[in-house]
Length: 80
Image 1: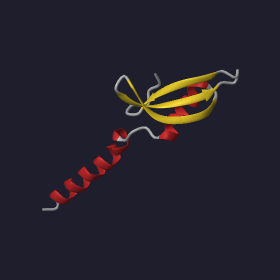
Image 2 (image 1 turned 180 degrees about the vertical axis):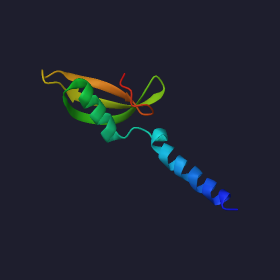
Image 3 (image 1 turned 45 degrees about the vertical axis):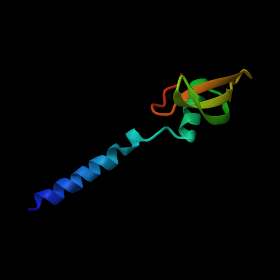
Image 4 (image 1 turned 60 degrees about the horizontal axis):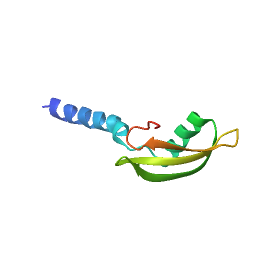
């Protein structure tokens, strides 16, 4: 009798723990990823589409003064 509530509780805990893996990359996370990759300062972050996939379009200025645009995949956080 005690096993069902315990299994239910354990299942809920596993779902809660796994939830961040399902969550989209936030605007702040995308900015941090682009900043780490470029070593520059983030100028703007906009949600966009690239090849039919949702991405963050992050504009950065490098230490050399070069303005770059870095695309961050919303689902995976990968820069491309």
